[in-house]
Length: 77
Image (cartoon, rainbow, N blue to C red; front, side):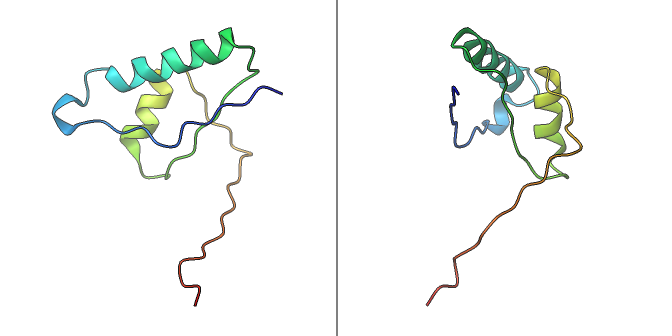
């Protein structure tokens, strides 16, 4: 299995809505394909419309069966 991890991608507000983010994600997808990866996924908040629009513009489709589970250890004494 080929696996890659990109921790976080963000954009400077002055350069948003110009297609930079979707171009970057599209390039990452092409690189993953070229390196033999079988797919890629991304997680974001349901109300993050900017991120959703970026990923959809780059060719992503919604995977309705996906569930993200998390553990939070911030309040550990």
